[in-house]
Length: 102
Image (cartoon, rainbow, N blue to C red; front, side, top):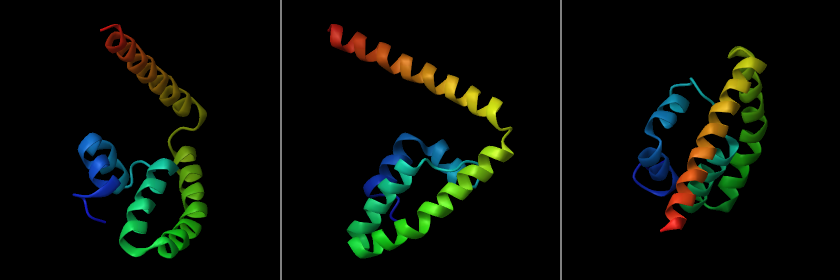
């Protein structure tokens, strides 16, 4: 993957800490991030390569998410994360309302 191009570049620029967490194995990237990176692979290697990679990655990703969630404290930790994300979403919505008011 080219860190200066495609979705990988977007993730590097906009969430370097989150990307680092995933690359160092502390977090599992959401499937939409994996799917975006597969789009980069498709541009570099073709649709067949991306499709094969997705077929291999989908079950591995599911297993990684399940193992990670079980090891991070389970339901209470996931609820905390959900609450934090809900707060971020509300902040983003408030910012959109501010910008639309102009």
